Image (cartoon, rainbow, N blue to C red; front, side, top):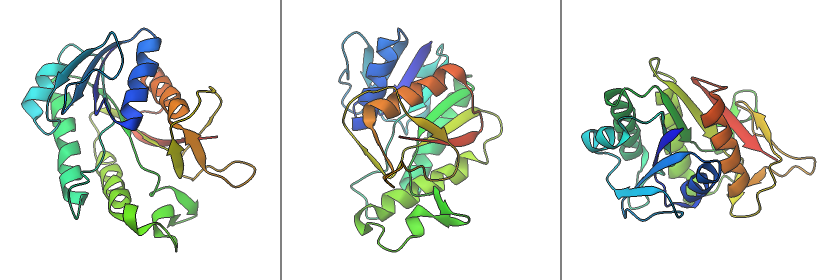
Length: 211
């Protein structure tokens, strides 16, 4: 596949780049710095909010992959992040690309019917704004009916680690292992993400991934 990857140099984005490149996909990696996250990929500097620029970069590709994160220099990242994702959707439309896979958040996952993780007592205050921003974006994607988007939520804990290739795919519920831990390595998350890019198995829905 020919994939344009936004947010390619971040913790998750760089691992998606490595996974996709290892599988032989042709990548155009986009970031503010323009640095190549892995050898052998095309990389360029661009602002993902620039619809015309991203559309031009994405033209001729098979899919857009977004590993963008809410801005961390904002006291309230919700509206800026929502505007950013609207721009990405507009760019995909302008480039005539129907496939869009998005790195999501865990805060909107259900821990019980009608109860989201972000609403639980003790949810870390330092990441509340980011979690709510991701939740807003998921709500936005659920209104997008003309693209085959998939929103991929990680578990409660995601960090650099080992690629095992062993993980579970779920839906709107928070996945936990037998010991009650909700976690995954960024490498295995990337493997699940690229699986979804290749298969288009869950169009216009949110999936979750965890051990």
